[in-house]
Length: 434
Image 1 (cartoon, rainbow, N blue to C red):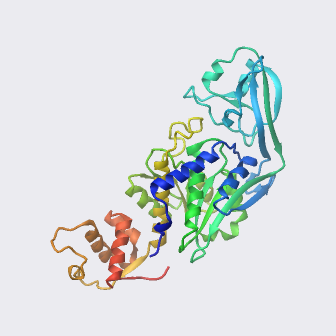
Image 2: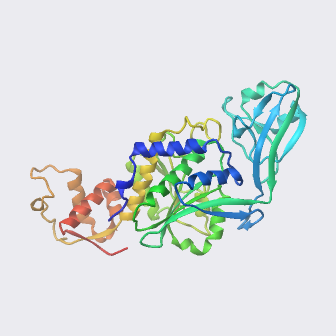
């Protein structure tokens, strides 16, 4: 039961600082479904984690989807009659509607308003809006900025390009004792948004960095791609090897103050569902049933694949203040919550790595634990003593350690510790090799 090698894992505080620093470095980059922003992001991740980059040409048919043309942007602004930029891409890359076609013209405010987007609930936030699959152009600004615009003619410039290029995704992998894989996936298609996007990117990148240093039972794969179309491209390219995906998690929204939330896979009762639910509930978080909307888990869980892939967040997307707006900035994510999310995922990994079945070697009545130094001389009981009894009672070759943890409502780590002690004293043996 080797499990996670905690000796190479940074503390929660140090991990949180590392994650936050990576987010801060990636924050200024303008990312989208395609383009140089995605490549620049992957280049930074690739400094610490070796990445295999895949380019899927524009126009490629991927199941029911078509890879869009590649979008890149250099600048964009709205200038008043005196030349002052009242909306400026250089101040915030959220100011330009994602995938805007090139524009250079002068428009009266009444016509310009048709291409302006504001946040419906907060007048100080710039919203994040896109038009990936329907050619359009526009600007996003706060309601207060819009209110300040005088009735005049404005210079409108979007210096962008839509060309036949490619969509970029990247993956990193480690080889374990067996070919079966644990898949971690996140999306890299948002511009300067910290919790909904960069927290997941940083989490998967740092997980890859440290898991690569361990000798593990499973192989591990770390996937970075644009939302929806990215996982579809990966599934399309890897359809002949999907039987290797034994467990999977889509990771996002990992840095806010909310408690951990796990959304089950379509299967509902896969081992990843049981493992993640156990760890999340132990941490005081919540577990949600599968539903066919949300993040990229819905691609992995589509009926044609039905992979055992759930989703782990803190506050789910669209439920935290600042979602898809300029308020999702470096002040929203906190290093202590990022570090906590990192350790939660490693605890899930540890469960997957060590969740064995055992057989009680002395099943007729309770073995006398006291003479083996496993029971306190003064009666009264403790959680480890209770765990010892649970493990002995349910180790019949049918129940896993995770089953015992769920049934006893004791933390998995306590159940695992009890099993290790019982193995040391020849009271327990593995039922079978995995």
